[in-house]
Image: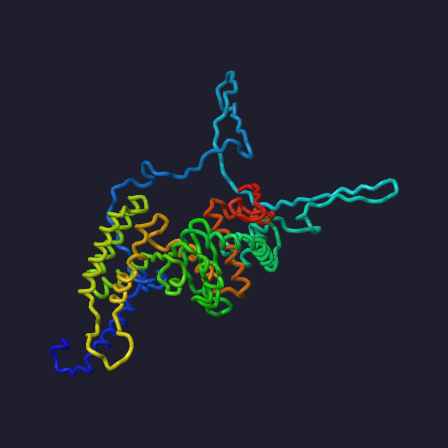
Amino acid sequence: MLNNSNVPNKYKNVILQLIVIVQELSGKKNLNSRNSSKPPSQDGDRPRKEKTGSSGRKPGGQKKRTGVQLKPVGKPDKIEQIKVDKSKLPIGDYEDAGFRKRQVFDIVTRLVVTEYQAQIIKDSKGKRFFAEFPEHVTRPAQYGSSVKACSVYMSQFQMTPYKRMENFFHDQMDLNISAGSLFKFNKEAYTALEEFETTAKERLASSSRINVDETGININAKRHWLHTVCNDKWTYFYPHLKRGCVAIDEMGILAKFKGILCHDHWKPYYRYGPLHSLCNAHHLRELQWASDEDNQAWAAEMAQFLVKLNKKVKSAGGELSNKSQLYYRKKYRRIINDGLKECPLSVPKEKSAKRGRIKKSKSRNLLERLMKYESDVLRFMTNKCVPFTNNLAENDLRMTKVQQKISGCFRSEDGAFIFCRIRAYLITCRKNNVSPKKALLFLFNGKLPSFVNCQDKSSGDFGE
């Protein structure tokens, strides 16, 4: 259009760049959780989901499903026998023929106080000798490990505010625990987990693949960043004022890492690790935007290609053969080449009066990124341990956002570090099939689960 007009050449570049800027601004207005990294809570007036047609299946559980059903136990805690009222029966002789059984499951919440009585003896001269109290019994009256474990679980895992926890202990257990005591329990757990944190960092640094991500948090009304490093078995959190290499170096994990680093293309991550894998969930959202807002046919085709390739990789057991890899790489490159024709550079090759980099559209930037980082985008089809997305790291971080919504912010850096260490421990325990309640009972009884390679490898069983 501009080529056929009488607009002087010196103004053409300016006009073309203004068009790109207008397109960018209009595109930002249309960003949502489907086509960008914006969370669904920021979508504004979301349209109602259209009602889908009937699936034809009957209501309730379907055949061959793996369900969870309440089943009777072999040894109930309490038995109540119900006798037959013989006054309502016809006159005759009757004998006992057994019982029909039904069980009712209930919860009893009550305080249990254990008194330790250390014996005192004295000899003929009146000299007294005392039995030693257990090591953990240090005061005339104190809270036990179950109270501490329950408190830390509610505070750090369920993110219950201190005031509501005070109400819970008072109403349910007739215990008047102050907010100061609740904070002390958290700090005690934090101190006891120092060896766990050291082990977690060592295991992550030496693993073959890790996922990394970061999200903004508020500490004392100041913007900070919460970094996570994790894999299928371990999780580590680190709060810091900075987002980039300064914080990453202080963590002390990525600088030692020699495996595959999975992330969402945050540029500082490319300074660490020999191999990288990019999150394709982010690519699919960006491709959705390019297709919807820029009407890019190549973007829709690329999104379909990635989804189908992921299904193919899963059905192949997590890794494709060399022949299949070559086939899909050719297909990937063909889509990229189609995109280069459909989405050319916005500014012609003529010399522009303005110095600096050429302004590119969002779709063009995405296209060039997919072309430049082809191996990192497709690494999930070449290695079994590489996932299609970086959802593992994002899932570990997600509940931090809930904590921020509940509390508004961390009141201090100490509180943030306490939350991060305890939360990482509980998530790691869950990944290793140890429940949060059991993990905290281990901790407050001076032990750690057996999977943690610490000096004290013992693990007791304190019940579920």
